[in-house]
Image (cartoon, one colour):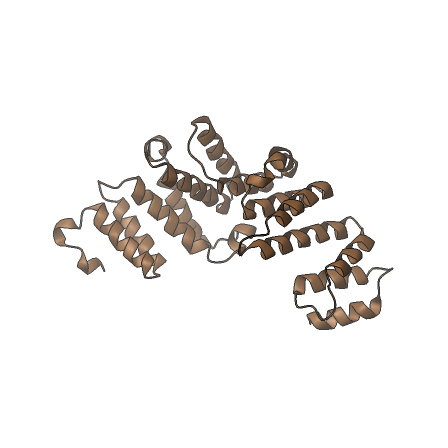
Length: 275
């Protein structure tokens, strides 16, 4: 606690950073942010003080998957992000000069997400371009930031062109974002390419979820394109019936059977199951 900081160390940022780290371990991210904020006011505050402040701000707004997907950030949480972004305003001093490649790459991704969540996709792209110009270290998580930023700027076709040859390198979440770009661009072949890449990733705890997500994106695109017969055929192959447990799959099956050439009796069963 604050009371545990020795009086002779109260003006040293490291004391507040240690307190923040302890609070984070204890699940108190709000307290960790406040301690990191205090650490930043000290004369000896460093890059790592800023890194922690940014990380704690993001943790407070990313407790569910909807925040990044829909850019829904309450005003009070947005203020925290703005404050963390401002801590890196002098990037020459507080980012590009850092001699810790792993941490620098992580901050690049986190700062990119902060820009996205504050509806500044153009600045997220600017950050990435600046990093590339400086040959700064980056990790694969930055792919999603770039793809999401381009999507926010209505540049889905650019996503497809730029990343088409890099699908094996994309982390799962970035691959899903690429497929969403294919959906936005009404590009079924590229959605299929992303789906095929997902099918190749048969190992790992997230494989089934990834493949299910990609399949749903493809089915949505088939529905939008009016290819209902193809959609119904794929639903049959996937074994979707009124007894299935996946609500999204049941919804697609219901929609396909509500079309003029569908089976209204099956549609009714599916709707009852969903309800």
